[in-house]
Image 1 (cartoon, rainbow, N blue to C red):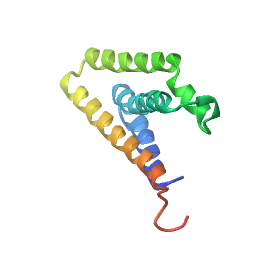
Image 2 (image 1 turned 120 degrees about the vertical axis):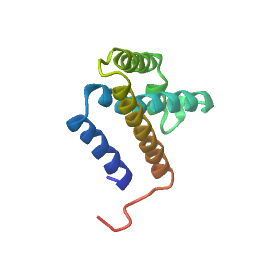
Image 3 (image 1 turned 45 degrees about the vertical axis):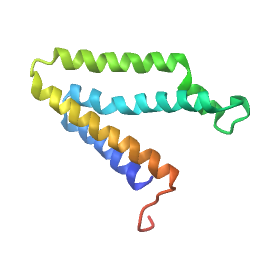
Length: 122
């Protein structure tokens, strides 16, 4: 596992173990959202998806059924934020978790693009 993937996984596990339900919902949302967005963009850019080496992956994340799941995840996050009895403090924690997970998503894709590895062999 790459250093970035390890850090991202540790962040999600720590959020699940020590954070609230609301914070975990917010931390998990970027993964779904980014995969759906990337799948849709790649699907629109690929000439013949059936012959593309990652065609099945692209098709899965560009599928309207997956988009519906992502829409539902966003609705859950929004409903959770609106219904939190703790109010602004929990919404701030949710925002912080969402932003941090979004950063990890960016780092995850960047690490794959640049074939990043641990600086010291594992």
